[in-house]
Length: 98
Image 1 (cartoon, rainbow, N blue to C red):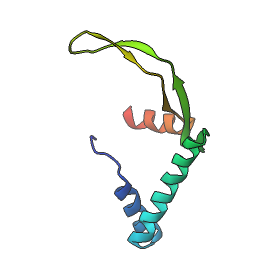
Image 2 (cartoon, rainbow, N blue to C red):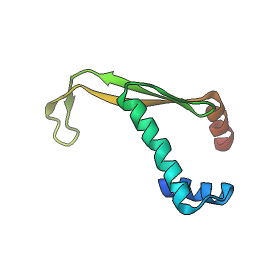
Image 3 (spheres, rainbow, N blue to C red):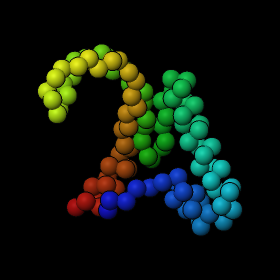
């Protein structure tokens, strides 16, 4: 554990399993990620069956605290992406941990 899955890893897996060229594999990964980002920009949720749902959530302005200094600071309102894993993902994770 401790490693990170990257765009290059995804493209490499497409190359190995489907047999596409490296360039084609990279283009597919980039296209999928661009479509997800476009959906977020349009305020849409992204649901990947058997994987999970990504939603845009608005966070209100609030007062926070700098953990180093303890000084209070205003945190501006913003939008964040949340992820809720599917039941299949949760079950798979539970099986690998136990």
